Length: 560
Picture 1 (cartoon, rainbow, N blue to C red):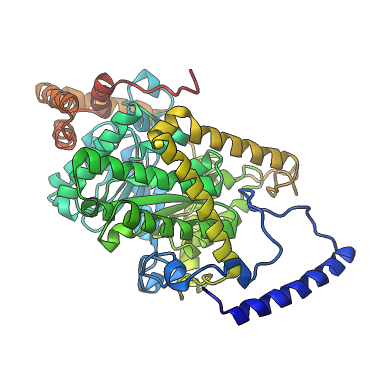
Picture 2 (cartoon, rainbow, N blue to C red):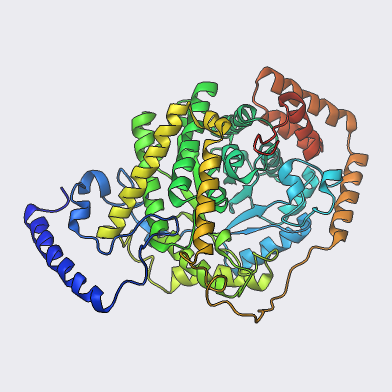
């Protein structure tokens, strides 16, 4: 028990007296709302006391940083030994354009790179595809071949700077380009570090950039896990992502539950399909969470996630290595909380969300720019977003002690509640036969849709407030400069692609594609064949077309 009987008795006596005082006070000063709740609609009590956490055991439920169940963090020294990685998400136009932005950010103090790709690249199409028309370089960088990738990483020390790539259906190909580029530059695969998002389950649930059906998609992910375990030990071959689940309108509990259950699905598949021991690969699994605007809810979500994953890896999978028990995660502030109305307010929102991520113990953080709701971020807006992290780290003192909110009656109670509700979802999905089966039934998709609808109803009824949108709105417009990607970027990108195809050894490229085709049909690991293919300058779409040919294309049943 966390508290002695004497303490609990004293608390109970004081609380009863306080409740009587409140009844009197409410006659003169009634509550501003009939009901107080988080942005995800978890009801919040007026007061939390020792009685709310009386069932907790300090050693088993909370403990200290660096000790199981890791509620308070994986590292015993927290941020006193090292700050989180300042990893600003960036990608725009051509590979040259993005490379210039990367060098600017590194010069400004960013400590890790993170890549946004344009929509054609995300979907596995080259820039000259009819489906890419008008989209090349617009929402991220366009990458068609290894030559583009070599331009992207020009001047970047691959053995010193870690790189995250937000890519899903074509993740095997972009990672193959990174591996090939490292070998060309003389950097051994064992020395490169970074992350590919490579999380297709959340695509089927929320973000909807998909290519092949779920079973084949998970097989390709397991290929990357196996290859990374054997040859690229510093790489996180999957970033199990709740971010996009939350952006699609989920609650914090749904984000927590569906993300953790996706992780379970991937671990089960690698163990079953590849025969790997869980401790061989689990330490390189990573996660990606949203940090939304409800400050305490987000902190509790991140703390609960660590404790849940530790229990799952130890008890469900029998992992022996404590690093397998660690839930390591990147965080991005909530894009869906940004408003086009009064966009300078977004600086405040991002700051609060970043602080929640830090107090939640994130290992890596991207802070959104104030203009991202309107366009690709400008250099000025990106600098403010990066400085937000640096001010938190260097000026505020929040990194001085580890998990400073631990022991708060409210924080521990809300953490427990979120965990309990997340376990309920996980049990339901287990009963359905796992996450792929649940996705095929439409379960997580419908749960998110209903949550999104409820929140919109609450906004419309002014039960939830967005400043500048449904309260304190004005007619005055705040003008900000917009970043626009010229259509010429696409034209030049297509010309480069044609030049590559003209000069390459087409016979070698075709043979490489056939090798991938055979590997897919046999069930072999595709990664060595993808690396060979990109070295022979096979394009992104050419390889993805092989996947589509062998595995088929997925169509969202909700749209057809």
